[in-house]
View 1: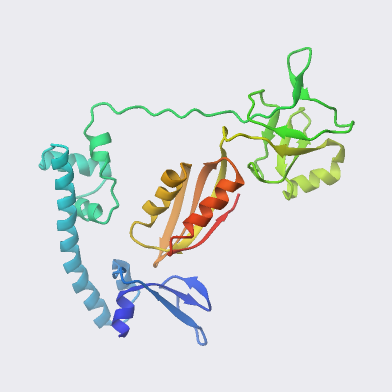
View 2: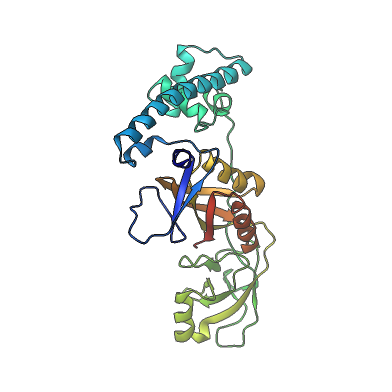
Length: 312
C-alpha cells in the first residue's frame, strides 16, 4: 500500500542521486523510494506533506508514540538510578535537566528513549564529587636525518645545491626542523616531498599538492625527496566527509566505530541533517592512510551510509 511506503520511507533517489524528502519533483524525474521496516514517521514530515488528511494522521500518530516514548525513557532513567542506588526524585531530575541542558522532564524522558543522552554520565560526571582527570600527551611532530651545527642548531644533512639523499620522516624528537604543510596536511602513506624554506626548515607537502607543484617548478634546487618511516607513535590530523540516510542512533554508531573499533581520537564532529539525509565531517587523528582506508571501508558497511571519503 502507498501509506505503508510513506510510513517506512527513509529517503529517495532522483535520477540515481540521494535527495532529501523535501525535494520537489520535476517532470521526467526517475524516482526510487528507499524504505526500512524500522523507520517511523518524523515530526518534520508534517511540514512536508501537502494534504490536510495526511497532516491530521501524522499528528494523531505522533501523540500516541510520544506518550509511549516518554514512558520508555522514564523507565530507562529509573532503572539506571536504581542500579546506582540513587533516588528518583525532583532533586535528581533537576540535576539531570541542568546537566543535559533540557527544559522539562518530558523532554528528558523522550531524549533518553531516543538514545540522545549518554546515561553513563549519571554516574561518571553528574553524581561524582570528583571526576578523574584525563590527560592526553601531545607529541611534537619532528623528523630525523639531521646534524647539529657548532651553535647547537639542526640543519638538513646536505645543502640544497648538492645531490640529496632521501630524507626519512620519523617520530624522533629532534626539534622543529621538519614541518607538515598546512595546505595539504599529508599523513604517513601519502606520497610526499620536502621543500627547504628560507628559515632552513623543511616543509613536507603531498606530491600532488598544487602549492608543492608551484614550488617544484620555481625552486627546484630546494626540493628534497622524502619518505615516511613512522612507527605509529605520532598521530596526524585529517578530515573525512560522511553522507547518508539519517537514522536514530546514527551518530552513536559512527562514533563507536571510530573510537572503539579503531581507537581513533576525534577532534571535532560537524553533522547536519535535513529531511532524512545527513552530511557531516569528522576531524580525526590517524597514523597513516591505511587507517583512513580501513575506517572508510567499515563505515560503509552501515547500510544507511552512502559515501565516506577523505577531504584533507
